[in-house]
Length: 412
Image (cartoon, rainbow, N blue to C red; front, side, top):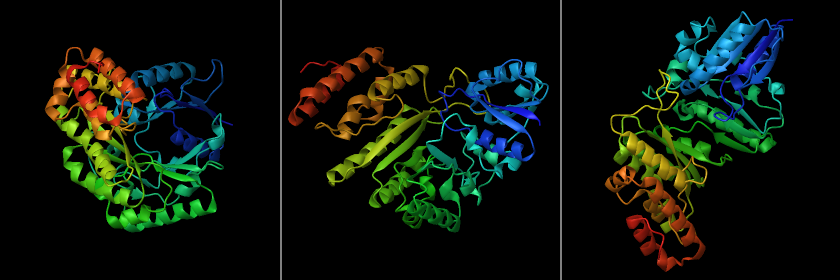
């Protein structure tokens, strides 16, 4: 029996998700009579006899690690196959080492269900694609290169892990499908909910607000979706985003996550406007007596066709000083250093909190990013906000925030 090691080359801290591609390859290899073993972010022990090693790669900014693992694997085994995102986008880097590269999706593995039993632990969620590909060709995205045009994947239910009731859908553009396909999938999702096989659904890669219609929103209504995920990749998407968010809020989906791309064909002032849209929506809902929580997830662009391991890419609209300034502000304003969750609370509105951290106008935001003492200012503001939440009354908040935002002090 052929023994094959399957290696996930991406550091788990970057992608703590199930390696679905490798698990499908494992099932394919088993069907061919091979014996696969999964290794996550590490190589097999030295001396282990293997006929082949298969390596999956992810982001190009992790290319150095993937190349190092491939180079070491070639010392231990004559046949090393590499696939995934980095290998598909930059195949020559792996071929120069002597590895065999597979570009794009491995269609023969797509037909198989994941070998969930290879995981060290029972999966707490299950994941699948109900479709592959995308109908758009965005300059920052690799999906059209790797997967091509959008197409349905009817066999998606075979991927579900036994016992895992949280379902993540990894479709790249679920709403771009014909309405009949969306209806077919949402009908099955409702049936799975009613049968108790799944408790919640997460469109993990986000929904394209430009493709949402009220008819499609009706099809999503009733699904147990904890977070509605949209994206604001450019200011041109703002009207569609505002419309789509309203439709989903009207249907009872009160928790949203908005991915906001920056450092790609934009500048800080354009970025500020896209950050603020979600806060203005929360403010509108609050004034109408409704709760809406929209966590804003800034996503810094990294090139997809070259390795940028030190994340040094700089768009012409930005300066390095401005990128650094935003990172400092974001880390101070965010509890988890990922999302900007300006939900307000303790007599503080979401809009007040956003203005406190990022300014009243796009121009003020840009001046903040360029402020020489931005790190010290961010820490003073963080301390001031903490003190305010401990003891201030509602009537004190607005003048206090304005004073701190103006001079950075924490005194009252």
